[in-house]
Structure formats: structure tokens, C-alpha cells
Length: 136
Image (cartoon, rainbow, N blue to C red; front, side, top):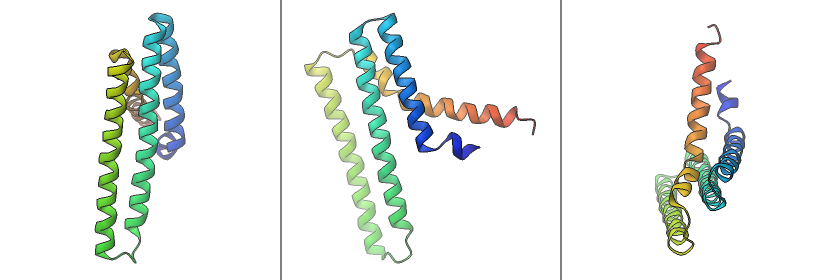
């Protein structure tokens, strides 16, 4: 039950659905520029989530191998940390460029960037709901 609700495929699918609902709702209730900002923030957020997942999975798979020397594990850990900071810098640069040169709506961008956070929160609440109300 928990594995199905928290699988990468379901989380990404829910994130895209949530992003589409947010973007369409923003377009209907506000404006196209606000909806575009929500869409841009959501795409950045979901892409970062997918890349982070791949990096963490690769790090854990490599570090879990028994045949790795301590020196090799240290090198892998350093590589993982460097990738993390590079990804964070790249996201910051993209956000800076969007805000500075395209005049994007900052509030819409923040709403879009929170797409994955809302998806994880709703999935966790769904699991808690099913656990407490499944008559256990």
C-alpha cells in the first residue's frame, strides 16, 4: 500500500496532474502570465525532483556494493555532493534569469515551484488517511 502510493511513477504522475490543475486554474482565475509562471516553476520543480531521485539512487546503489573500497566510497560521496550543489546553482541561475529578464510573475513561480512539495504532502496525508480509516 505505502510502496504504491510513494512510488516515483505515482509521485511524478501526481505532480504533473497537480501542475496542470494549478496552471489551468491560474489561467482561468488570474491571467496567462501568472499561469505561465506557475507552469515554469512546476517544470523546474519536477525536473529537479527526477534528477535528484536518479542521483540518490545511483549513490545508494554504488555505495551499497560490498566490493567498494573506502577511498572509492569517499570519491562517490564527494561526486554526489558536487552534483547536488551544481544542480542547486543551476536552478538558482535559471530562476534569476527568469525573474530578471523575462519579467515572470514571482508569486506564480513560487506556486509552481511548490508542486512537488504539495504532491508529497497530499500523498502522505492519503497514506495516513488510509491507515487510520482502514479499520485496523
